[in-house]
Length: 129
Image (cartoon, rainbow, N blue to C red; front, side, top):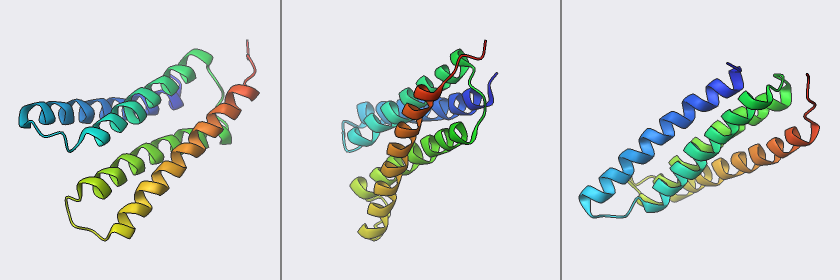
């Protein structure tokens, strides 16, 4: 299996489990405080990472600096955005708002970079067959 595909697939699986647990918690508790975090975990973490894993498996791209940047900004961005959102919106630890906002925005920026880099990868992809 392509290394990019494998690592993205594993992280997608982690996000899927976390998203399902959060959904079950919200349903069981009747509290929807985690709704935006839950949605972003599933869409950004599970769905996007899974889609990118499939792309790398189907198109068999070479490992280049650009693909490595994409994979790691995708993972860092997904984690940073969702953890930052949780810390900023739910405030479970009463951390300084500036700190949680930096994590939230930083994760979002890293994720935006990953989407832009993925777009570049699709433009420059050459079928190696």
